[in-house]
Length: 296
Image (cartoon, rainbow, N blue to C red):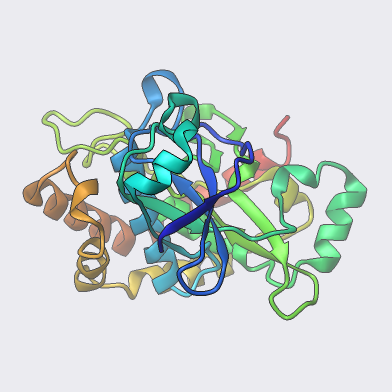
C-alpha cells in the first residue's frame, strides 16, 4: 500500500498509530504504526521495528492457522506525503520517516471489548457475535506465541487489555465478528537470545502460562477447553518452513534489531514451544479460567 491521505484521528494505544488511507487501488483505511515509535510504556517499551516484526509475523501466523485476525501489510510512506503532512514527523504522531511501516486494516463501525462493560451489553455481544470460537483461537494463539498483551495471568497478575480484541460488523451484514488485533508483544515482546536468558523476554525464558482469557468473555461462556486444544492443533500444523516463509516477507528495514542467527533461534524456540504446548494448557487452563471469573 501507499500512503495517500492522513485522517488525523487520535487513536488509542501507546504506539501512536495513525489512520492513513491508501488509494492505490480502491480507497482503504489502514492503522499504521511508525518504525520510529515504540510500543508500550516505560522500560517495557518494545522498539518500533521489533514491534512491527512481532505484529506482522504474529498476525500472519494466526492467519495461516485460519484464525480471525486483522489483515496486515506494509504501508509505504514517501517524502512527499510527509511534506504534505509534516505533523507526522513529530514524536506525538509517531516520528514517521520515509519507508515501509506496519499497517493493519481499519474496520469502520467496530468496537473493542472494553465497550461491552455491562451485563446487558455482554448479553448483546453473546447474541450477536457470529464467531465466538475466536475466543478459543485467542487463548491458543497468545499462549503458544507468548503474547501477554491481551490478558495477563503471569505470576499472579490479572491485567487485561480489551483494546486488542475487536468486534467489527459481520462481513455478511449480520451480527459482529471477533477479530484479534495487535500482536506487537508476541514472542516475549522484546525477545532476545541473550545468555543467560532473562525472564520473561528472552528466548529460553518465556513463561509457561495460559494467556488470552478475559473476564467478560468467560462470563458469557465463550471459552471451551476442547476447542482451545483444537485451535492449538491448527497452530501445530504450521511447520518451520511456514514460519520462515512469513519472516521472509518482512521488509529488511524492520530487521535492524536482530540478525540471521537470532532469527533462526527464534523460529526453533517458537516451533518447539507450539509443538509441546498442549501439556501447559492442560495443566493451567482451568485455574486461569476460574481466576478470570473473579478478576476486578
